[in-house]
Length: 216
Image (cartoon, rainbow, N blue to C red; front, top):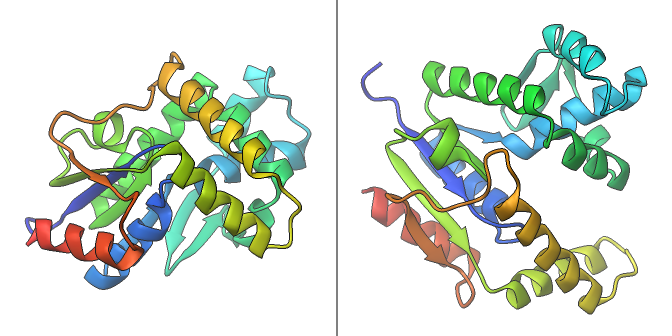
């Protein structure tokens, strides 16, 4: 399929990658792959099966019998739609832990690459342009100042009715940046050929327009 395209969207936590990647995919009429949701799916299955993050043999057995796919905005784990089941704080924590396990990353990167070979996709994450699709047709690195990202995350959590403190949200984002960019396995970094988009003073619509224009 010669006219297949892969669009890699990377960037730090809270930069708006998912919102932007989802909107671009919709506009182009292609599938959006949320790699974060894939780690959540594995975390969810591990919790359900009572498998500890240190139990590498147990994790390997689980990975050997796991199928993850995306269709029309749904994430499907072993044939079941699990959209809402994986959006809890407990699963977020579990996803973060299991994303640092080498065999989990290997399995999911392999799955992500298979998806990108089978159809046109927009994929967002931390290592899409550097590890998953170093040869992607388009690469974007979405970023914003830590303060702006914290403000967005804070507002999002307040809207969901959570009691949060802005300074704590900012501290969490700064910690996450440090962990993501210094971890041993596939740290967060901008691919050399990626277009950097600083969204600090941009609306979502402006970012989407900018990306679509760059692709034309």
